[in-house]
Amino acid sequence: MKLTAAFVALAAVAGIGADAQSVCTTNAARKEIRSLTPAQWSTTANTLAAMQNYGWFQWFAYLHTANFNVIHNCEFFFPFHRRFLQDFESVGRTFNSGFALPYWDEVRDYANPAASAVLTAAYTGSNGQGSNKCVTNGLQGSWTMSYPSNHCLRRQYNNGNTINPLYSPEYIQSLLSRSTTMAQLRPAIEYSLHGAVHLALGGDMVQNYSPNDFAFWLHHANIDRLWFTWQMQNPNRNFWSAAGTDASGKAIGLNTAIPYYGDAIVNLMYPSRNGMCFSYDNYNTVTSKRSLSTRGASKCIPRPQSVLPSLPDLIEGVFDDVNEVLADSEAVVKQTLATLSAPMLNKWFPTLANNNTVTYTASDIPEAPIVAEVAVDSSSPYSQMSAP
Image (cartoon, rainbow, N blue to C red; front, side, top):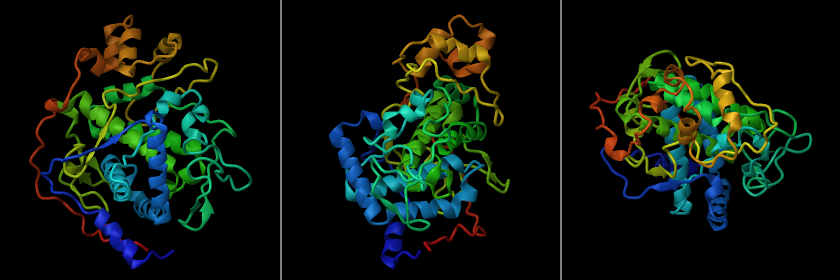
C-alpha cells in the first residue's frame, strides 16, 4: 500500500532527533492506564482515533515490520523501542499537546490476565470474536486496520477465552535484580514477559505488524519502564550499560546508531533528556499493585530462557500467603523473604539483599560517558529506509 508524499514528509519530521545535550522543558507523564481519570482516558482515546484516521497506526506497523529482524534478539531491542515509543508519543502530541502514552502493568494481572480491566470494552477491548477473531469492543472495536491490508484488529487469546498466567512480579523483580548488564537483562525480559504478552493476545500481536494493536504500545511502554526501573536500581552500574551485539553478532555500544532513526544509543538512555521527553509515575518498583484474589489459578513458573535461571519453587511459594498486596513489589519481597537465608537472598534478589535501604533518585545518575563519533552502519538496507 502506497503512502502519500505528504505523509512520508510528516513521518520524517516526527522522527527528527533532538540536540544530544538538551534537557526537556516538559515531559509527558506516562501513567498506568487504569490510573487515568475517565476524562483523561477519553482524551487519550480521541487522540489515538485521530492518529488512526491520519494513517499513523499504519505507518508504525509498517516501520516495525520493515525493521523487525534487526531490532529483536539483540541489544537494539531496548533502545530502538524506547525511540519508537517516543516517536509515537510525539506524533500524538501534535494532535493533543497533553498526550502521554499510558502503560499496562501486566504483572498486576499475571494470575488471570483475561480478567484485567485493560482487556475490556472500557479500554483496549477483549478477545476476538467470530471466525476472523475481530475485536468488537473497546478503543479499536470499529477500526479498520490498513497494514498490511485492510482488516479488523484481530486477537486470539492463547487459551480459548482465557489467557495462560503470565510472569509474577517477584519473578520479574528477580530478573532485574540479578541482571548486571543490559546484555543480560535484554534476553531475560525479551524472552519472558515481552514475548509472553504478545503470545497471550495473539492475532495482530503475534505478527510483525503488532503495533496495529494499541495493546502493543501499552505493553512496550511497560517494558521500557522496567528497563528504566533496572537502570535506577543501581545507576552507577546499570544506567549507561549498553554493550552487546546486533542481530548479526557485531558489537554495539553507546556510540552505535540504532536502525532507521540513526540516534546514538547514548542519547536514548536518559528519560527527560535528549528528546526522550517523558517520565514514569512509578519507576522505582516492578509494580504498584497486584492481586492474588484468584487464589486457585495455576501459576506460571517459567522455563529458563537465557542467561538467568528461573525461580525455585521455594521463592514462588513464599508469596502464596500474601493477600491483596497493595505495596510495591520490592517492599513485598523485603517483608516476605525476611526468613530466608542470606545466601538465598543474595542468589535470587541481590540488589534487594545488598541495598535494602537504598532508593536512588536522579541525583544518583552518573554523568553520561564520553563516546566516540556515532557509528552508523551505512551498508545496512535499513539505514536509508523510506515508506513504501
